[in-house]
Length: 132
Ligand code: CMP
Image (cartoon, rainbow, N blue to C red; front, top):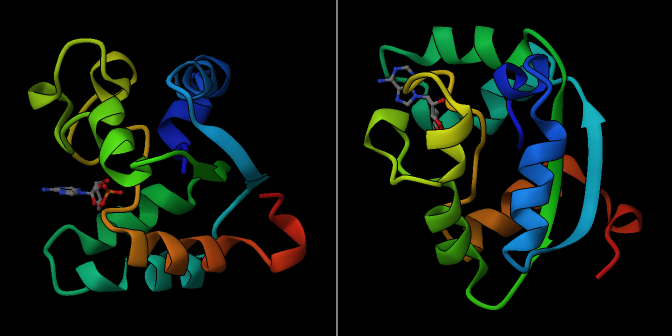
Protein backbone atom coordinates (compact mmCIF):
# COMPACT_ATOMS: atom_id res chain seq x y z
CA UNK A 1 0.00 0.00 0.00
CA UNK A 2 1.07 3.54 -0.72
CA UNK A 3 -0.30 5.19 2.43
CA UNK A 4 -2.42 8.36 2.77
CA UNK A 5 0.54 10.61 3.69
CA UNK A 6 2.40 9.78 0.46
CA UNK A 7 -0.76 10.07 -1.65
CA UNK A 8 -1.54 13.51 -0.14
CA UNK A 9 1.93 14.77 -1.06
CA UNK A 10 1.69 13.64 -4.69
CA UNK A 11 4.20 10.80 -4.34
CA UNK A 12 2.19 8.03 -6.08
CA UNK A 13 4.07 8.48 -9.37
CA UNK A 14 7.60 8.73 -7.93
CA UNK A 15 7.02 5.72 -5.67
CA UNK A 16 5.63 3.55 -8.48
CA UNK A 17 8.62 4.58 -10.60
CA UNK A 18 11.04 3.33 -7.90
CA UNK A 19 9.08 0.08 -7.59
CA UNK A 20 8.99 -0.72 -11.30
CA UNK A 21 12.62 0.41 -11.80
CA UNK A 22 13.59 -2.13 -9.12
CA UNK A 23 12.14 -4.91 -11.26
CA UNK A 24 8.76 -5.48 -9.63
CA UNK A 25 5.83 -6.33 -11.89
CA UNK A 26 2.46 -4.89 -10.88
CA UNK A 27 -0.09 -7.72 -11.17
CA UNK A 28 -2.96 -5.92 -9.36
CA UNK A 29 -3.54 -2.28 -8.43
CA UNK A 30 -6.31 0.02 -7.18
CA UNK A 31 -6.84 3.54 -5.82
CA UNK A 32 -9.17 3.20 -2.87
CA UNK A 33 -9.94 4.33 0.65
CA UNK A 34 -9.99 1.99 3.63
CA UNK A 35 -12.99 2.08 5.96
CA UNK A 36 -12.26 1.98 9.70
CA UNK A 37 -13.41 -1.63 9.66
CA UNK A 38 -10.99 -2.43 6.80
CA UNK A 39 -8.05 -0.79 8.59
CA UNK A 40 -8.80 -2.59 11.87
CA UNK A 41 -8.97 -5.90 10.04
CA UNK A 42 -5.82 -5.29 7.98
CA UNK A 43 -3.81 -4.30 11.06
CA UNK A 44 -5.53 -6.68 13.53
CA UNK A 45 -2.10 -8.03 14.54
CA UNK A 46 -1.36 -4.60 16.09
CA UNK A 47 -4.69 -4.21 17.93
CA UNK A 48 -3.11 -4.24 21.40
CA UNK A 49 -0.35 -1.77 20.53
CA UNK A 50 -0.61 1.73 22.00
CA UNK A 51 -0.50 3.25 18.50
CA UNK A 52 -3.41 1.19 17.10
CA UNK A 53 -5.99 4.02 17.27
CA UNK A 54 -3.59 6.47 15.66
CA UNK A 55 -2.78 3.90 12.96
CA UNK A 56 -6.47 3.39 12.09
CA UNK A 57 -7.09 7.17 12.01
CA UNK A 58 -4.09 7.66 9.73
CA UNK A 59 -4.81 4.80 7.34
CA UNK A 60 -8.43 5.92 6.84
CA UNK A 61 -7.93 9.67 6.46
CA UNK A 62 -7.57 9.59 2.69
CA UNK A 63 -7.08 7.32 -0.29
CA UNK A 64 -4.33 4.76 -0.66
CA UNK A 65 -2.93 2.78 -3.58
CA UNK A 66 -2.93 -0.95 -3.01
CA UNK A 67 -1.01 -3.29 -5.26
CA UNK A 68 0.23 -6.84 -5.61
CA UNK A 69 3.80 -7.06 -6.87
CA UNK A 70 5.59 -10.01 -8.42
CA UNK A 71 9.34 -10.67 -8.47
CA UNK A 72 11.79 -13.39 -7.47
CA UNK A 73 12.52 -12.96 -3.76
CA UNK A 74 9.82 -10.25 -3.70
CA UNK A 75 9.20 -9.95 0.05
CA UNK A 76 12.85 -9.52 1.00
CA UNK A 77 13.71 -7.30 -1.98
CA UNK A 78 10.67 -5.06 -1.40
CA UNK A 79 11.50 -4.62 2.26
CA UNK A 80 15.02 -3.60 1.23
CA UNK A 81 13.57 -1.13 -1.31
CA UNK A 82 11.21 0.52 1.21
CA UNK A 83 13.65 0.62 4.16
CA UNK A 84 13.14 0.44 7.92
CA UNK A 85 9.72 1.13 9.47
CA UNK A 86 11.13 4.31 10.98
CA UNK A 87 12.25 6.58 8.10
CA UNK A 88 14.93 8.07 10.35
CA UNK A 89 16.55 4.62 10.42
CA UNK A 90 15.89 3.78 6.76
CA UNK A 91 18.90 3.52 4.45
CA UNK A 92 19.73 6.30 1.99
CA UNK A 93 17.74 5.99 -1.24
CA UNK A 94 14.97 3.81 0.21
CA UNK A 95 11.35 4.79 -0.35
CA UNK A 96 10.73 5.60 3.31
CA UNK A 97 13.91 7.65 3.56
CA UNK A 98 12.92 9.62 0.46
CA UNK A 99 9.17 10.02 0.97
CA UNK A 100 8.20 9.44 4.64
CA UNK A 101 8.21 11.66 7.71
CA UNK A 102 8.12 9.42 10.79
CA UNK A 103 7.42 5.93 12.13
CA UNK A 104 3.64 6.44 11.96
CA UNK A 105 3.37 8.23 8.61
CA UNK A 106 5.85 6.05 6.80
CA UNK A 107 4.55 6.29 3.22
CA UNK A 108 4.35 2.62 2.31
CA UNK A 109 3.55 -0.86 3.59
CA UNK A 110 5.11 -4.12 2.43
CA UNK A 111 4.16 -7.66 3.42
CA UNK A 112 6.60 -9.30 5.82
CA UNK A 113 6.31 -12.89 4.50
CA UNK A 114 4.97 -14.83 1.51
CA UNK A 115 2.12 -16.13 3.71
CA UNK A 116 1.11 -12.61 4.75
CA UNK A 117 1.47 -11.38 1.16
CA UNK A 118 -1.14 -13.96 0.10
CA UNK A 119 -3.47 -12.93 2.95
CA UNK A 120 -3.00 -9.20 2.31
CA UNK A 121 -3.41 -9.61 -1.47
CA UNK A 122 -6.70 -11.44 -0.93
CA UNK A 123 -7.78 -8.66 1.46
CA UNK A 124 -7.49 -6.03 -1.29
CA UNK A 125 -8.27 -7.95 -4.49
CA UNK A 126 -10.56 -10.60 -5.91
CA UNK A 127 -9.14 -13.26 -8.24
CA UNK A 128 -10.55 -11.40 -11.26
CA UNK A 129 -8.48 -8.32 -10.39
CA UNK A 130 -5.12 -10.14 -10.39
CA UNK A 131 -3.18 -10.45 -13.67
CA UNK A 132 -0.23 -12.72 -13.10
P1 CMP B 1 3.60 -0.89 8.59
O1 CMP B 1 4.86 -1.48 8.10
O2 CMP B 1 2.47 -0.69 7.64
O3 CMP B 1 3.07 -1.79 9.81
C1 CMP B 1 2.44 -1.28 10.95
C2 CMP B 1 2.32 0.20 10.94
O4 CMP B 1 2.05 0.78 12.20
C3 CMP B 1 3.65 0.82 10.54
O5 CMP B 1 3.94 0.55 9.22
C4 CMP B 1 3.41 2.27 10.92
O6 CMP B 1 2.57 2.96 10.00
C5 CMP B 1 2.65 2.08 12.23
N1 CMP B 1 3.55 2.13 13.40
C6 CMP B 1 4.52 1.25 13.72
N2 CMP B 1 5.14 1.62 14.86
C7 CMP B 1 4.52 2.75 15.27
C8 CMP B 1 4.70 3.62 16.39
N3 CMP B 1 5.64 3.37 17.32
N4 CMP B 1 3.88 4.68 16.49
C9 CMP B 1 2.93 4.92 15.56
N5 CMP B 1 2.71 4.14 14.47
C10 CMP B 1 3.51 3.06 14.33
